[in-house]
Length: 441
Figure 1 (cartoon, one colour):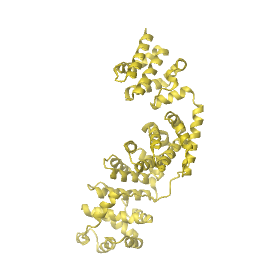
Figure 2 (figure 1 turned 90 degrees about the horizontal axis):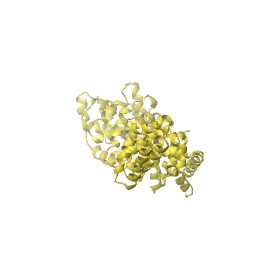
Figure 3 (figure 1 turned 135 degrees about the vertical axis):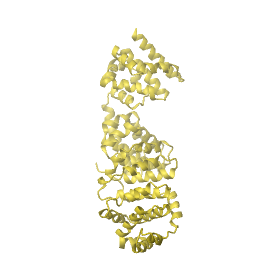
């Protein structure tokens, strides 16, 4: 499947807070002659930097068109040899002006690698770690533009940039988070960057956390756009929901969304999950009630034809999957996803008589999943159902099964829940303990 990534600039990062900060710092005057006297730069370099310094945008672009590689070399040379915070900051702003002014200008920076293997990335990595917010943000923006325009993306090690971005995603300041999310969206357009970003410790967790924190529609859109780009990789599509429980989250956001673009990108992400990793995602989608939601969406009027196509595709795949699922598979997917509700199997004696032994399969994996739910869930309905299921299992299980219940801590946990504040949890826990005792006798 080809990535259907919309045509936009390689890296588009726009943020009013950053623009305002840059405007304040752009006015600072720097005495370039001082650097000439200190032998940091020579006279012709002073002339070249002055042709760029405080000049209107069209003049800057014209100078770059005439001396592109010299401009890039000069900027990198300054960043490598100067540590005065205000100069480093100004040079980063200048680099951003050059690169954002025209997409083609990145090639001048990449050409400098022939003269120095540290160029063009290392000087900006150094600037990104300086203790100044504007310098850091500008350097990260420049690194994003350079990464997205790199001739051989697979040869880059951007782990430092990914770690820095992950830290910003965790910030309490929404302007900083906004810049970081835009950088992620730009980077993930490049296929070679997806798996390394996915493997960055904490990166996806922080990204998903931004969806859970009553985000604005624009932030929801931007974050889901990042997830959508990630799901073009089959390896990620097969693990994303299992590790981060995004399916119910995307469905809830799409249900509550007012903006069509938020629904569009949420459905497009779900479509990728279905198309690239059906075995790992379809059951979770059925448990999360995506099928009735797609039926509802299919009946609405949309201005965007892509939504109609994606909704139809997901709906049809879910319908096929639903028809082929046995009752036991439906039950198992409820337990595996931890989304228990009072569906028919839980209450059916016939179901338990026929299937309780299947909880012993694969080294008691479903029984262990029930025990995990009992010890981690805080939802009273889920706890009550899990207690009910343990009781039903006890009724028909072997002596070995009962010993496993004790070994994995399920028996102990059910006994603790007999004093739970919720009446239904208490009742189901007591009932399960009675069944256990009765069978033990």
